[in-house]
Image 1: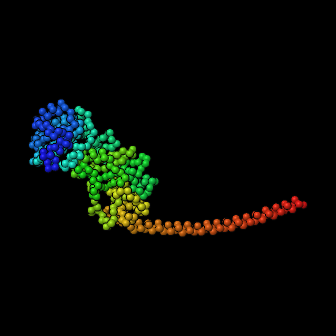
Image 2: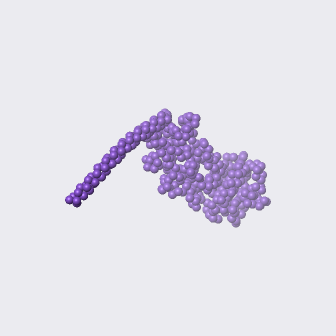
Image 3: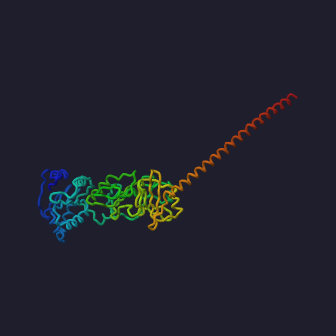
Amino acid sequence: MHGEEYGEYAYCMILHLSKDPFVGNLSITKVEEYLKNYHFGFSVLVVDGYTVRDGCDDERSKELQRLVRLAVDKVVKKVIILVCNGQSTTNTCDEFIGQINKLEKTFVVKVNNGKLTVDPDILYHVLSLKMPCSTPNAQSIPQEQDVNAYLLSKYSYKVSENYPQRNSSERKSIDEMSAQNSQQLVLGTQFSERPPPVVVLRSFVRHGEISYRKEDLQIGDPEFQVPSDIQERLLYKFWNKPLVGVRVIKLSNGSTECHVDHNLKQFTLDEEIQLDTGKKLLLKTRVRNGKVSFEDNDVKYKYRNNCIPECIIDDLQMRKADGDLYISLHDSDKFEAIIKESGKIKQVASAAVNAAANAVANAANAAANAANAAANAAANAAAKAIKQTNKGKSTKSKKKTFEFRSLGRNSED
């Protein structure tokens, strides 16, 4: 097992073994007897490709799987299975690896001509993960229970497969949203009390790592950071998968779930619409009877946390638009909306937005003129009132003097 980058000593360092670990060529029965008498942190089982090929026979297959299950039960952290020189039995090896990878705590690696088929850095990272420890002799979780949820009860989230189609909302409906902020694309970090489930990230995992490539990232919240433990478990579970869809959902109680969606497709504008140079797509979703949908099944793409101008929403509602909605941005503040109905593209875009902007500007000017007129009227009224007040004060003052004099004269009399 001497590779160009990692030799035997490197493997020993990874697994915390001595420089010259004991290696034995034992039968399956002998290995089982050995495993039954000891408990291990790690166990490394080396299997040649021809043994795996023979394992296609029912009896041999049962023996191999029984051995691996026993190792899983007796090992605290990880059972590493090295399948050596399986090039001539590729289909058989892939079938074997697929079955074994379903078991908890297993890690299968191919070694062809002494070289790993996985990047050594990935291998090192996976083996270095501090995975939840199992109790010796504890039964491994059956695959039937592990399909829908890779539960990590000691953490505040879980990684699960077969994403449930429950329409987890990425934002409230337009009506609910209007009560808070009619322009804002509501994200998981914006709610304070009992928010709905919100998709804060939708992308793909490439060899266990969440991808932020342009062609992969479909929904992202710049204020949300994926917990490191979720990232580690994705790496642990999918290090050997080239592309797997993933959603991270923030629940109303603040906890986070990670769901794997094997049916997620990459998003592209090819054969949909063409954006002019300098325009950035902000949102692609569905609009029905004038109402913009932010349900998970409808939102195909959402870029960061941008605002939708009210004039666009109002125009869509006025038109009772129905179809695919694309909203783009250019020059930092100019929004453009395009509707694709039954394959036909309708540009609500700059014309509608500019018209609305002009209407707003005209209304603002009218309001300003009205305000000026009101101010002038108020000023005139105030001046008149002051004049009248001064006149009244003068008359009243004279009257008092007259009355005083009158009283004086009466007292003299």
